[in-house]
Structure formats: C-alpha cells, structure tokens
Image (cartoon, rainbow, N blue to C red):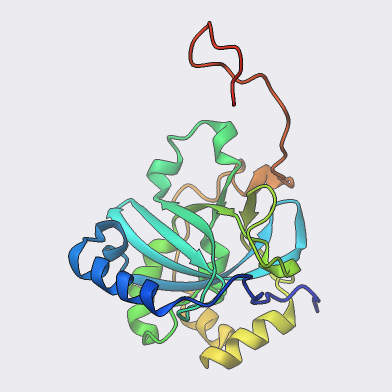
Length: 239
C-alpha cells in the first residue's frame, strides 16, 4: 500500500535565534536542573495514524523515561535531530494498569503487540539483541497518544485541536513507501526483526476488546459549553 501523506518537516516562521538568546540559554542550562527531561533514557521510532483517518500516517520518534516499572512517558518528535518538532506525547502502561482503567477510557489506548512483533517499532542505533530485552516488555503494554502538531499536512505551527492517535494492529496498514524510507535511513529490516521477535508474547489476557478505539475510529472535537466562573458574582468568565 502506497501513501501520499509522508511526514514533512515544515519550516517554522520567525526570526533566527539571536546570539544573546543562545548565551542566555547556556547560562540557564548551567544553573537550572532539568529532572523530568534528564530521566529520558530511550529513543523509540514507530508510526502513528490519526484515530479517525488511517490514511494519515506519521513517523514518530519517542523519547521516553520510566516513572516506575509499569509506567513510562514519552515526548514525541517528528525527527530525532536538534531541530525536531515536538508533535505529541505518549503514556505507556503495563497490562495490569491498563486493566484498572474504566472501559470508556480504554478506547483511547492502543496495544503494542503488533508494532513490536512486526519489527516496525525499534530503537535507532541500538543493537537488536539489546533492543529485544526491553521490547519483550513493551509488547505487553498499552499506549495513549495525543498529537498537537499536524506536520503531515505541512502545518508550520501546531494548529487545531489535539488529536487522538492510534498504532498499527495488523499487516497491510502501514504505507510501503513510509516503511521503506525508514528502513533505508536507519539501516534496519522490519522483516528480519519480525523473525527475531517471533518468540515474544503480547498481553497475558490477550488484547482487550475496548483497546484500539474499541475497533472504531476516534476523533477529537471541540464544542462550546458554559464555563463555570470562579465566583458566583463574576459577571464575565474572561476579560
């Protein structure tokens, strides 16, 4: 299957970073701590599609850190270089935590079994045997993804409503040209990794029927509602 919506890297409008700004950044970096960001220990590359439109597929680079053994959180960029655009977030939980979620919430989460076992989720630059040690855990997990920046349509800024994203669940969904481009750039073979990961097992209870949108499309929409004021006497919510 071929696709036309291959991820782009739109130019961000605005003036180039000034020398004075760069110097200020160096000074603050030397003084301040960056605890949450410093916990990032892993780079995963995978593919997401919009919850209501599988034809819109995006290459997604996850930079992840564990909060504990059952929960990790990831910043998602369109590319791993210094000029990568922060396009979204993903939370990854164990099967045990996923099963504690209300059924309505489960629909927003996707399974990772196919992504891992098919080879399309990988750690760029990491030897395959080392990757498989962690991916043998990831294959059993679920993820919740929100994208804020629709780079696939060429947006130069993060426009519109944040969108729920989903992940691949079977063969024939991923565009061939998108897969081949990533395989070439990172010198990986999804087919070979599929063979090497055949021993892996997904969630012990099987993929939950409410996961992956419950088998239906999901789209984030915006609607106007009354906004509760801070005090009953407040005449206007916003000034």
